[in-house]
Length: 381
Ligand code: ADP
Ligand code: MG
Image 1 (spheres, rainbow, N blue to C red):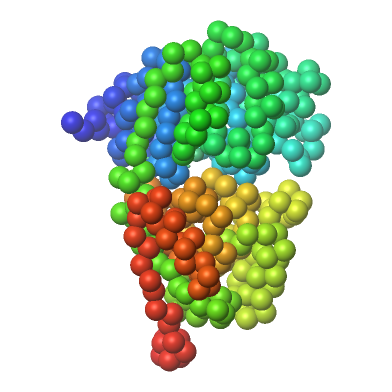
Image 2: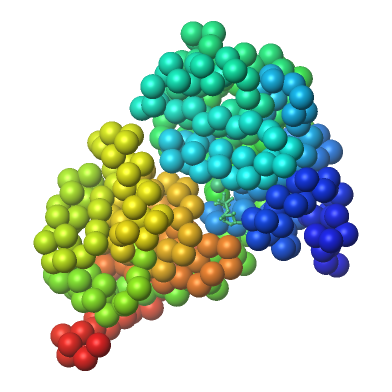
């Protein structure tokens, strides 16, 4: 059965005109599977443990029912969302602000690397939804500059990544600082044991919702690998044959990002790098250039690229093969988002073939061997 926006239903619940108008403006015509499954539960006040691949609309899965329920007349923080990185905090804050736009709900991203005074002023002025990274949130809690006594819903977004990044203690401290009478939602692309245990300790009778990865990511992303001893040359050939590419190229280390960025720039590509050693304003500038289409190629480390939702990424390129299958899934999830087609390319050296096979096996996908374009293909273009 299809619920059309016109009838006022989305994901099986009746939405107010204001929320409906907002999501229609965002181009949402039908709920994604994770949204269909979670929106009614969240609206009913249940604790939810939601698992779905990146790019499947988890933000709106919790964002729509939260924005529907909030009281815009109160200036208290009513929902708190934890995210692993600053970029994600910004991105989720933006998406929630769009959903809550016509209800005039105020959202505030709060993360390290941004002057704390400005955040303190904004918090004092009053916001209804705070989206933050665990470290900076805890800082505000300890300083007493954020009041969480009215929080009704707490969201742990991209929980697996927060744990990977070592935020477990901070998260537990924050969980203890919000009222016990609350709704807790946890979203993640994967559900390792550590997350189940966190859920057992801090959630009340959570409903588990899972949308399997096979049905979501794979059909939309064509996956190739190229075996070569000269990966830089291979990468340049691929980039030269693809006109209008908007690519994210992953490197294993920050140094690798810097070196590859310099090599690509020297060859005339519009490329820039993103990693954790850059200042916040440098990172913002690079992201803006990429979003505004002033860059063709974003070179990044895993951490810097976590969860980024950038529209129309045509290629995800693993210049360095990911360390493990989870990381592969996260990386290629940057393309083929929300029903668009994408290409994922992995460069390997001959000795990395086994690692590639391992990824193929545990992600249950086919990664096809590609033939590098020859110089003739490039000249012919
Ligand atoms: P996830 O958190 O699962 O990785 P996001 O919440 O970041 O995914 O959503 C990915 C993209 O899909 C975003 O650009 C979002 O606006 C878009 N999106 C989400 N839900 C829908 C929908 N129902 N219809 C169309 N686009 C959607
Ligand atoms: Mg997300």
